[in-house]
Picture 1: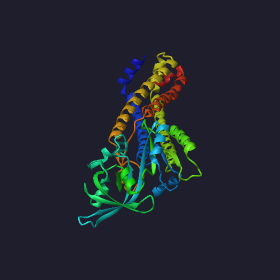
Picture 2: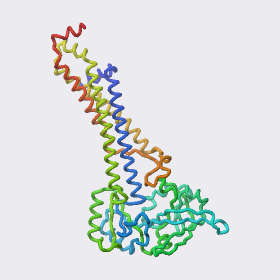
Picture 3: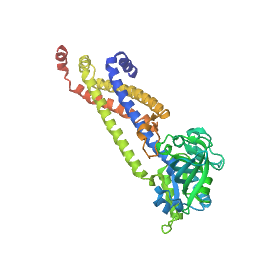
Picture 4: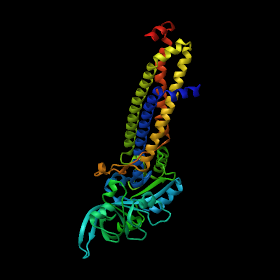
Length: 424
């Protein structure tokens, strides 16, 4: 019977083409919208974790209170010992120290006089260690536009637009003016080994990347670091696992009475990320939910209209002696075939478009020109397991339900009235 019904749908395109197009469009838009929402959230969490928060972060309690001011005088000490403890106690995470710093970058001319100056924000990461994944995590190879990654003391990277603004080229000497951990003035010369473009406005406006050992020396922080970041070895942030580890660490090592004792926070505990993620999740569900309801209403209406348009056909079939239950079942089967076909086409095309935007992305740098959010300038979709069924299921159910409701009229038809109806 399925084969017979399928041939009927192919031969009578007026009965099947429009409903399939409607179902396919609704499913396509739902799949695409969900994939974009999923991609935005994933990109925000990933960028924040890689450049700022990690999946877990350890710092002193007092550093945490003034974190936005980058108070390196309140930084962690005896970092090597603490790193050894973290690696031994929580081996499922990769632990790495970092120092964030700020200051003034001075560019001298050929006579040693100041040619240009500008405020700078910097990240010191473990770049020289061959076993470290910091260069990969900061995406330095892909972000490198000119020169090379620093491989010897005294070399740094600058964001490309920042370097052009200062008039700095490769191998150009620059001077960092900042504050040591003891509160004194820090003056340190560096050489620009390369320039990078992260594609994140907050970083590209004025960032400097240096090796941890160079900044420890410049800021007088031997065996010190502002923070130690932890990254799950499976690359994904797992909220429950991170929360359990942070709770366990704080019970063992954190002392409320000691402001310099280490404190571990999850990604969600930092910068209001927990509220932001919940808000974004809720808004995403509401938007997708409203769209799903609207799409289901359209498809339901399409199923109802299809049933009403076939009022005469049903009358003929009843007059020829076909049972009401059999007619009703064939209409349901037809709507299932239409729903399956439309949902498959819509999901397939929606995933193709989502895959394109997952790879190529959509440039929104113009709207993020003054943004300080760790968010990529390129908006990307993300295909997740839910992308495969988020539009498919309602596309199939709504179409079938519409036909089922309209088909109830079949059982109200009186055979004695059929010929009068047909004559009319």
